Length: 265
Image (cartoon, rainbow, N blue to C red; front, side):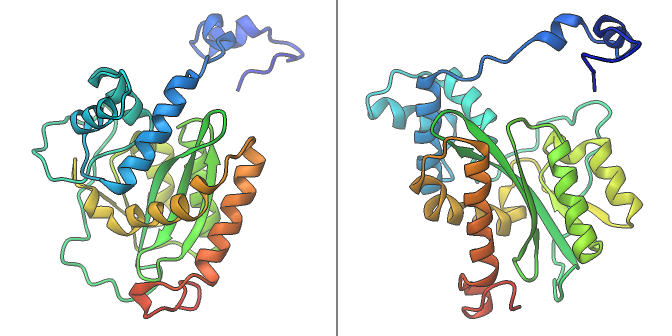
């Protein structure tokens, strides 16, 4: 957005035009400590085993394993990892100002064909030093991963790129279902869906089971790919993820389809 070598505008002038401070432009995030990265890997592995485990239970589990942690740290790390325990709880959260929350449209709906319903979600992927995020768009009927992207931030851009690729390759769906993450409530995401005539559906707060098929998807690549490797770079992670998703779509038997892979369906 800001060009350091702009021919006519200095960095300071560009910052003033965008209403941001120069310190914000020059700020470089420090990232997480090695200790926190190790904790995040442990949390991720345990959460796959016990997805109902909330902040308090996760804190107790790590303390029992000999780690000196408190709930404040675990709550921050689980939020950073976008981990939400699977259980129903009262809806006591208010949506952020300027972000509309859409109703859940899939209750009682019979999904009988491709492109009737798509779903999207973001998950955390550990690396040897650091972590990245993966967004995937899946067809609810075939369970095929239609498009995906990785990013080292949670900005909405990489989600929009995946959406654009899926629409370009397969045409728009009737309904798109997501959670209430800020990326999926952003103007860029919702406006793109509205412009292609897709109805927007969102999970209820604290109801991960509303988007259960893509929640289940995350278990497979982590067990079968991510946790078996220690990627050093984003390019290595991208190659590994691409290889696994190709295998998942074209070869991996799927129980919902009598053992046939999603691409065959």
